[in-house]
Length: 474
Image (cartoon, rainbow, N blue to C red; front, side, top):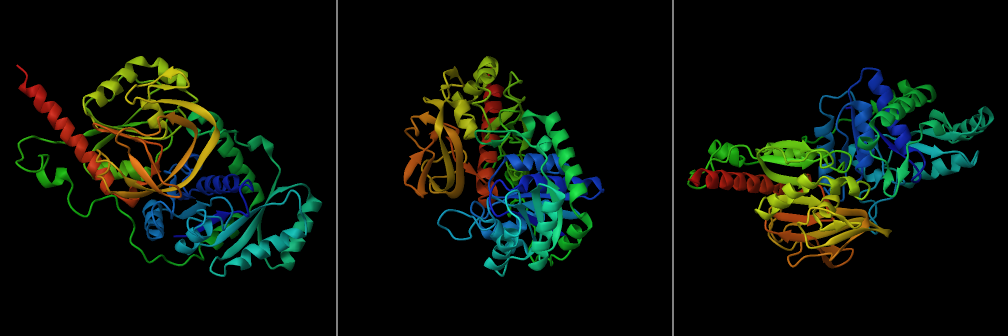
């Protein structure tokens, strides 16, 4: 699998611009391009998916463990002609206090992939050679294959930069001039997601492709990608090692087989307000025997027919609080589903949606808690253990995840908390109530596939119980 890792000395250098532009430019050549993002970020993969027509996938060595990075990559890249991995932060920046863990450099080494360094050259000339030399020599196991110079001011500026890098023996694989017209808008948590500006995002990706095609040597970049050696790993699979409940009983419940389970419908929140999800979650639920159906809390006034489980992931409900609140029929349906004991898994935005209110606007009222925007950014990796048995995780289940929000919810935990954080701070967080598991913590289920199977089984059991109850009525 030819592959490249697009990295930078620091955030803000233009990694997303270059990576997305490369993906789109190679896709326009007729190549099947597999898009990947190092780290936990949900937003960049949306632009990658737009550029390639394939799901953007994350490679996070903290949440999933280093041992899963290559298998997850191989799973996502199967059948493709080229894979492009956008890095996170600076090349060597990783989880705080954990050395190289979860850094772009670690991902590049695990994938045995050459690195292309995107350098913001707007305020330097010959010094660029010293900067690049330092990054190339810091870790001999990281193979820096070339540089793309971003925000170059003029032809003369380009000549000086090229001369300096030629002295350092570093190939220049591209030169991009300042182009504010293709900038993508940002707000309190980063770029505005694709789902909120689809037409504009399409135009931006097309402009990025044109900029990269004009400024980069695509043939040289492809040649570099082909120098990556074979990976000696089996692709990750969402299929469980043992048969799912559906396969074991041909649609019958475990045990006496009296109540048919069938394929439970698991409704996953989508649309502009709920854009954060990892592609592997839906794959794991499907592999566990569930039928995954997407609904939009901004537009749909009812849950999908036959809903047996509800997944409400991350996103920006704070931006859409008035519209979410105005959809009273769906809020009532979610509240009734939870009150009846239906399994619900809610992360971050989902937690806010289940609260009594968000910035004073009525929400679903499933939780006795109120949420509001805050000036403080909560950001970082967490190590967590499930405190209470729930539809998502048995008490004692250990997972790694991350928090990323500018909201607070009061109280921060219910009588039965969802998680106990063990690092970097010790506290309890979230809510478990009947079938509901709600928390700020974002997790990657590929690290612990049992949570997806447990949730699918809970949805199947709940669906069967509802059908049995309906059949028993006169």
